[in-house]
Image (cartoon, one colour):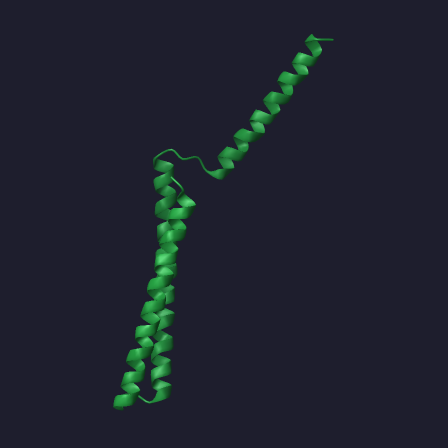
Length: 107
């Protein structure tokens, strides 16, 4: 299971969705300007505020997805990078000790 790839795919889906929403917001606000419901400044402010809200919610969603993915990986027993690094360090020390003992035996 490639968790980084899964997370990247989820983020790309979110980015793509946000782009589509931004385009629709622009279209709607331009239509309201044409219809005389809003002036161009109001339409721009409306679109800016709505996009700011969407981006904030997207950041919250991304953080929540990262937490859930981290918890899932922990639940199924996938070690964290720090744990792997610690084990590599221990393995290096043990290999060094074995080499030292072998050298002492063959002298």
